[in-house]
Length: 85
Image (cartoon, rainbow, N blue to C red; front, side, top):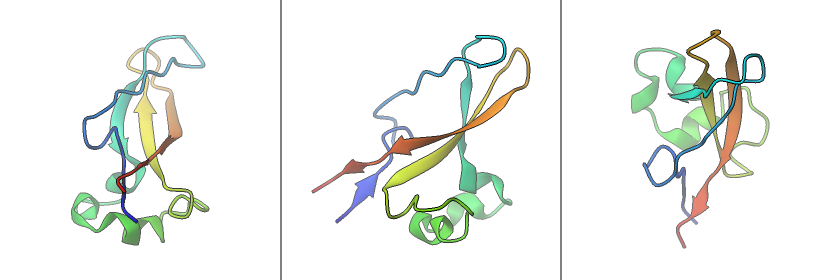
């Protein structure tokens, strides 16, 4: 079975309001892509095994980091992946 992230693939936008200042937060990408310069080029399921997030692969969720441009707050949110089949 194959799953994809609707945000990574441009099918959906995730609107998130900052808990500190109520500003609109910006999705700055997948959590795993921030590990090092080569992380965005690695296989997604492989990086999910070592990202430190319990069950993101099993639960078919994609961890995204959101940044508040107003106050600098950062939040990690799990985005439900879509089943292709």
